[in-house]
Amino acid sequence: MDHPNKVYISLGSNKGDKFKNLQDAIDCIHLKVGNIKLISKVYKSPAFGFESDDFLNTCLILETELKPENVLEELLIIEKGLGRVRSKKNEYQARTIDLDIIFFNDEIIDTKTLQIPHPEMYKRRFVLQPLSDIVSKVMHPKFEKSVIDLLEECDDKSVLSPTNIWLKNPSKQYNFSNYNFLAIEGNIGAGKTSLANKIAHDFNAKIILERFADNPFLPKFYEDPKRYAFTLEMSFLADRYQQISDDLSQLDLFKDFIVSDYDVFKSLIFSKVTLPEDEFKLYRKLYYQVYKDIAKPDLYIYLYQNTERLQQNIKKRGRDYEQNIESGYLEKINSGYLEFLKNQTEFNVKIIDITDKDFVKKREDYLWLLNEICK
Image (cartoon, rainbow, N blue to C red; front, side, top):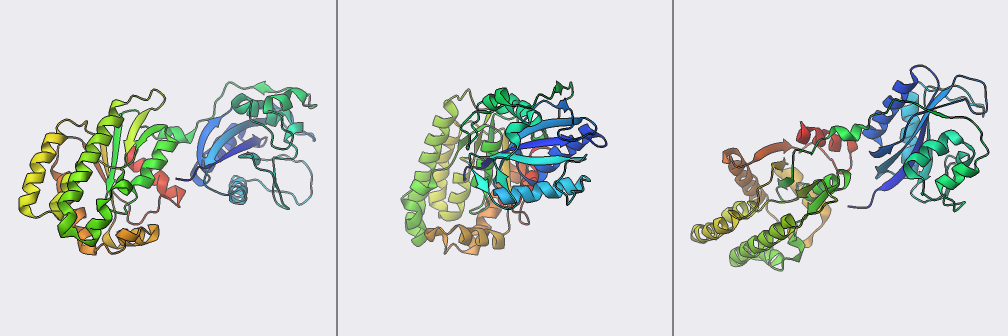
């Protein structure tokens, strides 16, 4: 997973229900732009540069995979949707909502439509004060001064009053506090690793990723399944057992829970498909000797996608040794998972059909998936 962009946004409102305008804007940013990490206090401040009602102002930090121009585009759409009408004249005016990008990572951008850092931010106490509350030490990439230094040097003598109301962070609605260990499973190409990475990053989880890329027998298996099936399944079983045992035993005080892109039971599911009956019986005996000693996930998520979509995903990610996987093999794997999940009683299972979803590219699909997991 690429490291997401960190964006710092200033929000203000001085028309209508000001607090509701701020909250509605934050909710829209969450839905359309990215994961909100922090929201500052809300400050009451006088209108800056013109006579009007007092503003309510706040700042937030979010993480997004969007480019700066796309973030600006989304913010303008949100402003318009919340009733802001921009004047063609370059003048200050009252507004239902005002959304400005202050920083974008530590980049310097200067185009006709976008200037980052915001060219006026260092002059405005109503920006610097709430921004300082949440990122006082972040450096201005042009001035090479911290936010707190800019605040101390600011010539704007406006008096800001902190309010006793707090805005809600919509990212906090997804509750993983009931889980110590979350396992995400699925067929080849279902997106389990992508989802595990996104959850781990967004919700401060320790991640365990299957080390399939290091298995020297996997390419050989796809070339000659009959010859290498037993060797492959035994090597996977040993590696999965070692990895899960090691990672689950290592306490990380700075993480809230553990998320894995596999569960050890997949060894039994795949081996039942790949091995002849006599070898599978032997393998199953060995498997249960291992499985009884491994911690079970508190929640087991199975991402279901139909065979056509799986084949599209496999081709898209371009691993050479996967390109000739037959649809019949994928169908057997899907059937093996579903048969197991419908009959097991050891842990909590959620089967989620994501055939028509693209949670990697579409944020609304990702949020839908989080809702399905957490409800």
